[in-house]
Length: 319
Image (cartoon, rainbow, N blue to C red; front, side):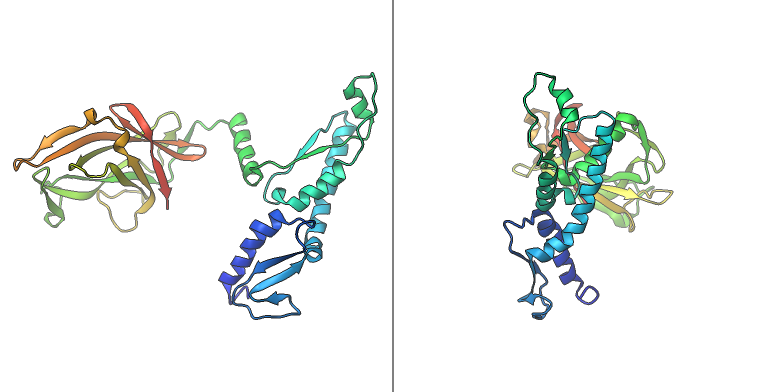
């Protein structure tokens, strides 16, 4: 099945990872049904109507050895801390298996079963160190990404990244006035608004390959947009990357579309648009704006600015 029905195999794995592994609870689930569409019924193997039917006992058999290893490992850490005079108040479950309800239940019953300490006039901390102590088990909402978040925070605390080197050239495409000394005549087109011959898909490279990029200095992409009356003010632009040592002057095959930037210019006051009129009396609005890009630890962040004033964020759909 894994070799001949890859989609079927992946669907079963995905369901096991996202539902069984995280949500299984022996008190609520007598059995689990894992989808393997297209497989023939096989009673001995537990296959029925495209599902692998597993009893709670079978799931527990899979989980129990791993859960016991986790409990033994944490138990050893707790004893080590207490042996040095430390106080263990709680255990936080993080990571993929940290979301498991079954693991949570087993950990809670193991570490949180001790009775509360007896009343005493001695300081609570002193009593706690000498008594069998219950440890609270915490099950955070973002357990799946907690390990990554913690690693990033630790890195920022101990080793602040000042700048990075760009692995690629990064740029945007634009249209400009046709220049017969620079542009092939086959690329030109007539713009009824600018009333000139223009060429499109010219590349402006904002970051060179190997250049140092600082988190404190944004990279600005400049745009000029024309809008006829009633035309949508939501515009899209592509951030393009090039892996070659020398980046081309125009958009060519082999360039990489990193992400599509969607900018809502409705947030910009209408007074900042310039009303222009062609020689044929056609009116349109023109706006000059910039998109500032910052390379932060979480990735690329974009924002819209006009005349240096921020007018909102820019959504980026990465490809």
